[in-house]
Image (cartoon, rainbow, N blue to C red; front, top):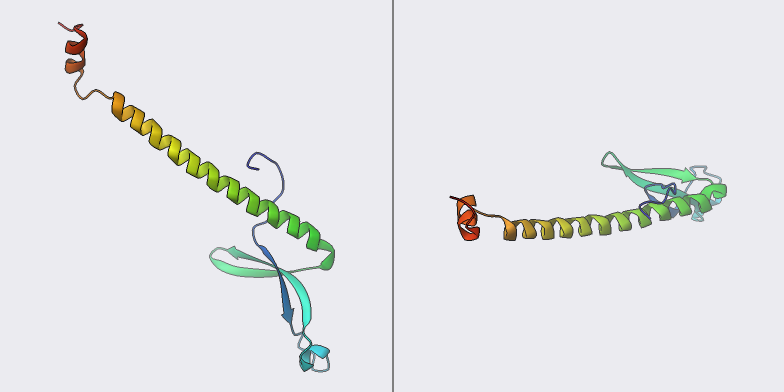
Length: 110
């Protein structure tokens, strides 16, 4: 998923019930309107955008791509951290504190 070139959209598609504000509308009597919204955090604040019905399937696909990308990214970051730790361990085992001790051990220094 990390190397795919799929478009992604950060956020969650929500189905919300709301009123339109028209006093003569059915929503004023309790039958609220159903609409889809995209909710996302932008600069630390939650923002929402109405999603027209004709775009719902595409927004679902794009937000799904984003979630799959983030899961793959998390795995990659974890594996990278583990690999870095193993490399650090290999270095620590192989590192010589004093090169003269190593030379004496191999009897190559004068």
